[in-house]
Length: 119
Image 1 (cartoon, rainbow, N blue to C red):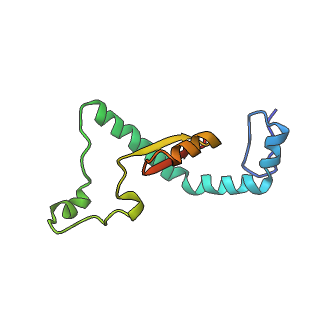
Image 2: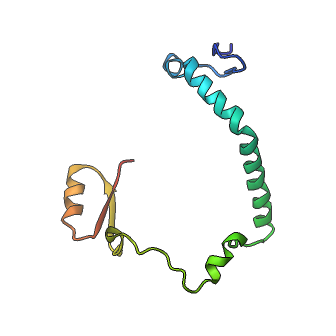
């Protein structure tokens, strides 16, 4: 049986758990419905563009630069901004879990950067 969203034009066909029902408030559903109604046409156009582009890639077309950025590529004076100080030397990095022992070992390793993996 569909979930009664109490929002005109919004129907939820899946089974909704009590925890999900707490989140799927009429206000939240109205917000999502407004986003959907505002952006669905553009979203569908972008998805079609993605499908069309995939067909081109599957046929062997290689990725290329956008024509509208040609002036940047052809300007010999154009330079990107210098990296921020913390990003200048990224030759030695360690990524690891956030348990205490691993973090202490990583910080004592001499690596320039430790990236905590919270997964």
